Image (cartoon, rainbow, N blue to C red; front, side):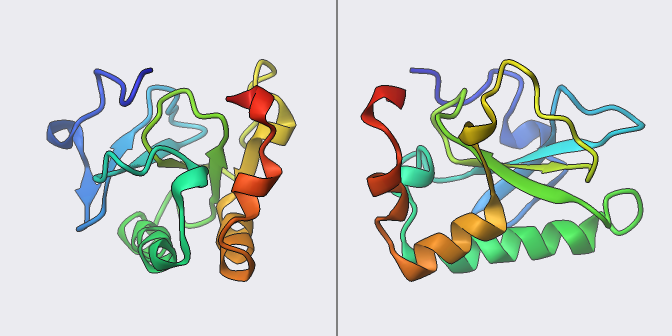
Length: 135
């Protein structure tokens, strides 16, 4: 089980807080930015591990990203996919016109704001929703 890409690490981070570090994703391009925020907590593998207590840290990193990247990234989407390619919770900050790769099923990509709302309303929302076959 891959937990974190080899080219991603705190030493490559361009911004961090107490819970996440943000790196430029390898898919980043000048015309279409792509950053990822990686959890500092190895026990947070995916959206299945998120609880209500994690909502403030999710909101905080989204807010801090917007403040830190005020120019090119001021209008962005925040996505989480499941199952993840790497089993460490991470959020994708992408250009609003970002195209999901064709090899990624659309049903596997979740808007982070919806994730937060769903967990706020039902902490077990994703544990109930995700098909066992995806694991």
